[in-house]
Length: 141
Image (cartoon, rainbow, N blue to C red):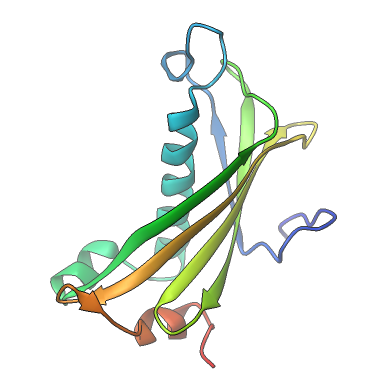
């Protein structure tokens, strides 16, 4: 069971990480760009857990591309901190999916990052309804 917090979406997955020394800047905190790597890895693992393979989709002509990244940095992570990324997803319009991703430090569950990552589906380079993806994520209308 994925933990719910006040004002949180219905999380569908969670993935635990640890901060590595080289991900920190001179101030001793995780460099802001590394949060996007963490979030991307968690999204890919979530999609794979639902049977959605980027390489298979791409080979079939469909790509999910990132069109917008919104990240609210609440508190820094430091070297060796353990944290968990919880992911939810919602449909927006006909071609977009928004991944709601929150990062919490462990074990105290302090909110570190709140992010909304918007993606759009393309087929052969043109906007397209991601019907197969929506079906696999149970987001059909």
